[in-house]
Length: 289
Image 1 (tube, rainbow, N blue to C red):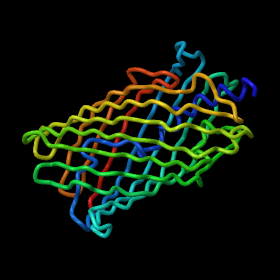
Image 2: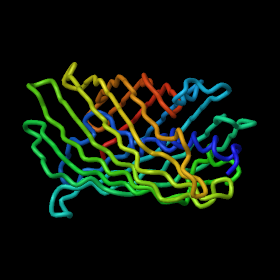
Image 3: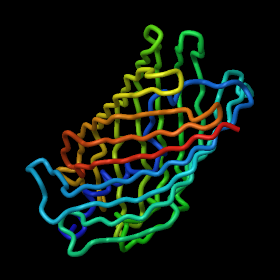
Image 4: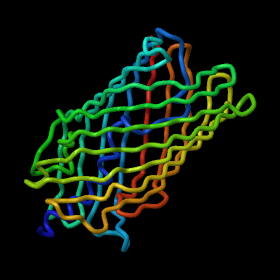
């Protein structure tokens, strides 16, 4: 295996987690709604990084820019025997990336891999704002993919599954605390620069503390922590590809009226190991049908 191929593969660890709104949750995402409710959700994430952080420190001449758009459609229904939310997500992205060891920047734009799945609720008590559910989303590898620029491609050329187990609990009349344990499981990319790329499971914790500022507006502190995801290329384990990162962020949610909500989020990786150290801006628009 050559150095040319092993080093760019490091960047896939960070890029795999940048699907536009597909895996990341926001505060109170696991709140329920009555049977028959439908949501249309538009995400506009912007991601920037001027450094890739390896275990030994900052890797020179690396950077990342992602401008993306994603649409999610969610149905609330009792048809599953319990409340559940069949849904799909379709992302579009424009990515510029210079990966570790790459001779030049890669740039690709296009439609990414759609994700389909649902949340199944175990606890559903709106009166006390207590909820618990399992969300499972499957990524279908039909998005735009360039075998010669895989790190920037909108599609990943592999199946993937994101499973998230959430517990949400209201505290008093204004606070809500949430914790979500997530596992990202990846199939193999059989054509990463002509070789087979495999990735181990990536585990994440997503935690939120939100507070009602007014009856229609709430703010939230978010903390994400991710570990795992080591890579194997052409049957050889790649040293230094097990990632670890922590991101902190602040969200502001506001209902414009009973059917429309807007969200603004700012986030920053406060620690990163084998991962791009990113800054993120997210705008989100929700319409209730």
